[in-house]
Amino acid sequence: GESVGLHLPTLSVQEGDNSIINCAYSNSASDYFIWYKQESGKGPQFIIDIRSNMDKRQGQRVTVLLNKTVKHLSLQIAATQPGDSAVYFCAENGPNEAAGNKLTFGGGTRVLVKP
Amino acid sequence: NAGVTQTPKFQVLKTGQSMTLQCAQDMNHNSMYWYRQDPGMGLRLIYYSASEGTTDKGEVPNGYNVSRLNKREFSLRLESAAPSQTSVYFCASRAEDRAQETQYFGPGTRLLVL
Image (cartoon, rainbow over all chains, first blue to last red):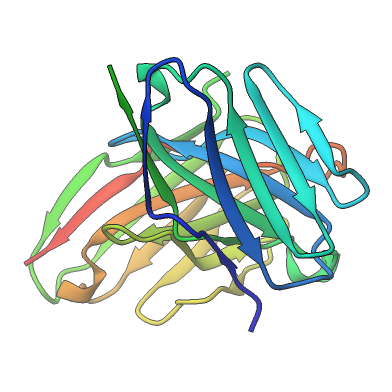
């Protein structure tokens, strides 16, 4: 079935370094992808999204890259800060409007920022 | 603008008890969702509502019922709680605008079933 998964369950990064979080997806028909950040005890928070007609999108300190050829999504965080410590989820949304625009979530990657 | 709100924040139930989790959004979104998140795992969809008056099953609907009371509110009911339903429950809402497809999440309800 369709799935979204992550390569690394935990990522330790030194403060100030760049972080890269990877995600693989299997539904080639998906046309919208989202990265969420979830801090301990809180709900997922939207970070950045990208549509399938793009291969790169930049936000504030974050960049999402989409490689449709290999069905791979990544989130890059520049100059990682202690406040970036959280679990990061990727999610995909298929093009089927009738399906209620349900998101399929990956299992999450925990990012630990070392001082 | 409070976004998505959920009540209660935390609840302890005994096996067999019932309860209703409340969710409300003030963003005028059409679609609303209920997810559960178990430790170390991602979110799994329980039920969703694409518009007022409609509800549909998600990935893990067994043991739950939902009511889309109006456009703002979407409640999740456990008729007879079981320990397997111990989890964190998140409500989310989404606009219909294709330019803004993101789902926005509430803070969660932590449920412990003994």
